[in-house]
Image 1: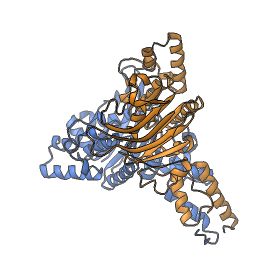
Image 2 (image 1 turned 135 degrees about the vertical axis):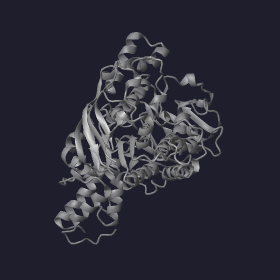
Image 3 (image 1 turned 30 degrees about the horizontal axis):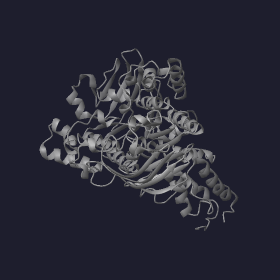
Image 4 (image 1 turned 90 degrees about the vertical axis):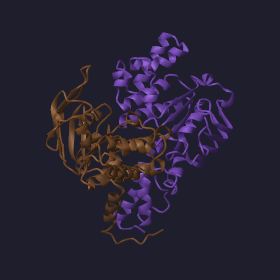
Length: 289
Length: 277
């Protein structure tokens, strides 16, 4: 469970707040997505919820952040290990460099927690399998492609079984297959009761996976709601977020009377196909009103 | 400037074959997207173009000259490479110094240098960040600095490795325009990408790599029409392509403009409806 109340933060060298008066909650079994343009404060927010901001960065903060009921202000970072998992934006920053194979790299966190050997091996193998990394388990992390490194970074966090998971653009370098694996893994986590905060640029995946979407613009939350409400908002581009092509096509079609008037603008392929299917059927029958 | 690759093969020291007899050529002003699953050999191919890797066998010719006979400086004048991870290529203390590094090393005259740097900063939307240290920038901004530093070298061939990842909406729009402008200027653009919407909107041709070999090479529209079914497994097809297929339309659409045109033509035979809501 993540609870952020009236939280503002300015970096030590910052001239303006990176986050201002941010308020939101994410429940267990919920996937909350954060979207916004460059410099909106998304990665800072990921750092705040995972405890690295301001503990490691310094800077001035107001307001409260509670994770699983604990105020992060009085919780040392070490107290969050195994409870909050952070997958960083750049997988190169996450690989320990202290291990020589993918398998060892994924086991690294568990080794440090003193998890028994048999259990460790079983958990590592499960994660390798879930993320399609079994075939490269004995390779050096540095021999992997960018996408594979990204899966590895996710695996090394998943294996810790955190109850709160924060992911900062975890799929930016992944192909469709890798993407599907990650979102499948996130779905499983949700079912297991994990609280997920996901920063993501790929709106189509979000539209399916997210329960709620927050939009950050210059450090402030400017919109919250279901993917359907938020991603179809006509101010999305002003907030620096790419609208889905489905939404753009329907909005333009609506302007020419070619989108069913009572249907909300679509944010998924299914909704777009249903709406445009209706338009096409009516056009075919010649009874378009 | 013509890039010609002939029977290019490359193996990693551990024996893994990354490229296996790859051949293709690209004309000046062409915009070519290189697609493929993770680990298919895309980045390895790009690294050969710029001379970071040397082929085990096969040849690369640029403008009729084999690259294995060219020195690094000569190659740097010809092919610009923007890394997937900008931190692999950034080292200077400010954006403007970083962008100026290449043209200075290539010994462009000072006036030309200034012109190239300013134009590169402008085209990548970095003019206002010129005096910032690259380490104080976001990942997306650092990626644009890496791009600007390559643009400033004014190379006839530009190779981009995953240019849109980590970029926000405004930057993706800017990147797309840039790709179009480079091609209009007669420069050759090769880009590795997973972003199929970006590919459909800004590229002429796709080359698909599979297990180190080329499994498809041709115009974007043909590729979408012919192999979309199979490719859907590893590549996320453009949104409009998938929508067109769901509506049972024959022949692919790939962009919003193309989709709306098609929809309007469906509407055309029937009396034009007066349905403005």
